[in-house]
Length: 409
Image: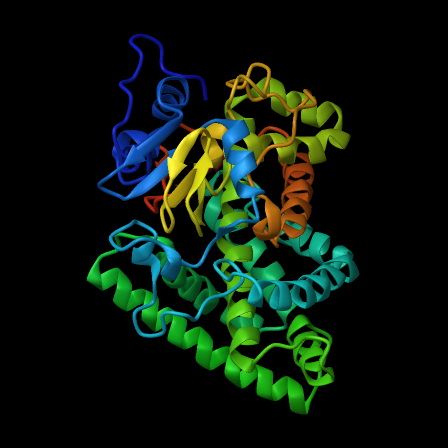
């Protein structure tokens, strides 16, 4: 998606102007992000009480800096991050916002069990992708999100966890509700929906963990309760429960967007689709280029635990630093021809999954699913194309995904 021709966009004055709250930024956030990166790469937004970084070097250094913390309770009062605090249980969090020493205690056994399970299930995961694509309509026009991009990730993560697959619609609904917790300016109605989804997941995982203790099965829930019982995973029941929920939600929604964004990019860049068809071995590199060019998560944040310099600016204790992953991944100082979507070009490492101790735990699974989808989808539908339509993008701030994508086969 190249920048619009004509006059340069004005430099945004607030982080809100580059999020999905604003219709123009929802359609294409990259022109205003480029304007910031080139004119005000370290912006202080007093209304949101946050710093906003847009250069690759600054973003990468910040996400890798272990002196920052993540839990919203550490953020200054009135900041955009402080709005993420669960008022009923303010300290409860998954590894997404957990700080050391808890993070260092909880994440390693969870990650080890999760990655072991993914590697063990690689053939099953690829079979889910293949079967879902084979079950999609053979001809005509259909919504790729509903038929392929939504069902694949939720089925995969359900199979890994060991949850009841006849309840996939519930898991998707609960996931959509829970992820509203990452919207710092959600409405009271959205908060109510978020809490209901969280309560439903809590109740479901509580029941399932008890069932697995009595009757173990070959799944991640069993792995975690057994590691917990042996002392290898020194986690409380609630820590197991909330982190299994986080895997369900994260492995569900963002991978859906990675699939949808990638298919849209290929169908709007036919020369790149032709390159993939000519050399299916490019699929892994194609996934990385989709992640660089149109990643599902567009920003992440860190909180200063003490006064410090960030990108040459004085950041005070408790101040929030938002990092634009979307902007960093299009920085011309790091990437040659950054506005070009090119799966044949070997590029520097992107920051779509963040970095440091909080790098996305689901990255290997997302890559595996997207790679298989890109290979299998265009093998089954070599003549797939986009009919005329207005693309509607997700309205959730700091995320980037397509709500509906009609394709013709």
